[in-house]
Image (cartoon, rainbow, N blue to C red):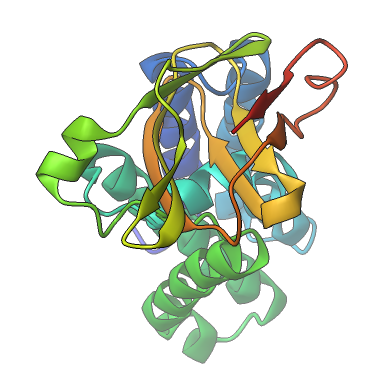
Length: 242
């Protein structure tokens, strides 16, 4: 068993990435399954414990940090109430920790390094999760809304490539303070943002997901809203809200 434990991290990460790819909109199947296939190959060679396997064990962590998947993982970690996605992301972080521990054990080929693998895996998992939320924070801006306030929040549809705005105003006066409150729903197969540069507001919504926003603003609109992902703005994903 000791010989094969380095394969656990990449194998688990491959399984989780495949599950995420097939669960619904989000990661493009061609990309998600291709990376998962590479990780399966890494899992096969990982038990060899030769020096060249160490960088291979870092393919999974690097691909997650460098790709848009990192933004989605940060989004999930900031919303523990969305239990399914939150725990899937925790499992991904755990598998990343196992990959890091296996890579270190290859570089530092010493019994002590192998015995401390569980500690390294835990530290790696926590460090990976903290890095995601620190480098690309996706805070839950609607976490303080009550159930009644959520039910009353106007819904903004994020589609390819436009915003479906409600008839009611998004910016309203609440006890003398202008507030922007909305339920952002993305039913498309691509991630989108609801970005207002004037307010420093940049709300990312993964494909097939939703989130609430409730923020105080210094003044009422109108404000230009745009999607900052890729060429979505040039494709027409820009509008004005007041």
